[in-house]
Length: 259
Ligand code: 13P
Image (cartoon, rainbow, N blue to C red):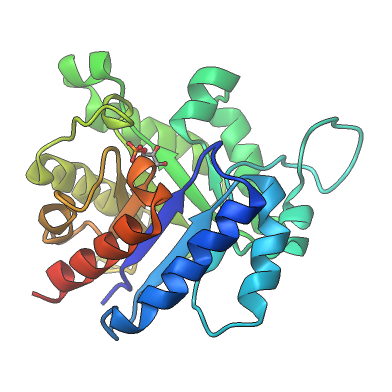
């Protein structure tokens, strides 16, 4: 059984003080959460990583930290960039790579994403690779094709094992819009991604990376997504900014998976 995974992508939100308040709120709530094994990861802006790692070090709270982006080199003259080693140093185990906002606003290509994944893996970081189709691509029924190309080009020669990374299927048109695919439509894409990873392995039932859904995931819809066999968790944006709602999502998601 794959461990359910819930990731909060805070994007460009919050201050250090607000991040601390958020963790305190989760800490208060934690005892009420079910005892089933699941993984919780928060991806705050870079400036909050080290203070959050310090806060978490002194507590039993099981929350991992992820960067929202990374450069592919270890160090060098790349003004404004943050390296995989720096993310490790600041307390991250994971890093989001290829988010659609990076692709759209900062021109990230599959080739660049491939380099970033390589850099992350070399530093011992676990990439959370985001893929997803635009509204036009969906209307042209190109979803499967687009996703497969994004993954194939991000991988290129890399063949990481099942626990070496996480995939997030985030339809671009569903991010921040309140729109979502039907859970069964998302499941179809997740299934295709899983089959693709299985096709890379010689074993038919090989373990594959966990595949999370992202795009307007909320307390209202998380259970329906998590009931699908190939949806292993959620990468949440807006709804994850509130500790209460993110905790509720975890609670509902874990329960739906246990059904
Ligand atoms: P929303 O949950 O705000 O739609 O954002 C999803 C997302 O981009 C997570 O990475």
